Length: 153
Image (spheres, one colour):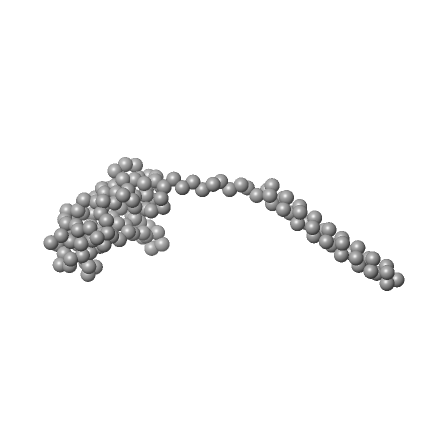
C-alpha cells in the first residue's frame, strides 16, 4: 500500500511540473506573438526648447537689445512669446514679445526675433527671461529660460 501511495505522489509531482512547464512555455509563445513591436523612437532634434540664442550667459547688454534664436513651436501662442529683463534686485526693466519668423504651428524649431527696450538699471547685472506663452495660466505648463547678463554702463 505504501508503494502505491509513493507512486501516486511521484506521478502527481511529475504532472504538476509538466503543467507548470507547459504553461510557461505557451505563455512565452503567446506573449512573443501578441506583443506589438515598438517602433524605434526618432530623435529629429534636441529636446532643448530654445536654441541658437544670440545672447549668452554673462554677456554685456544694452537697450535696445536685439534677441534672436529658435524656439520650439510649442513655446508660441499666436506667433509670439514673452521676453523680459530684470535687474539683480528682481525689478522688471522691460518686456517685449518675441515674434516667430516663420510658421509657428509646429513642434519643430521656429526662428524668432525680439527687440527689447528697457530702462537703465541701478545694478550691474540682471536676468534675461524667455518664457513660453502660457495662455491657460496653468503653472504646470509654464516654462522659462533665465540668462544672467551684465548691463553696459
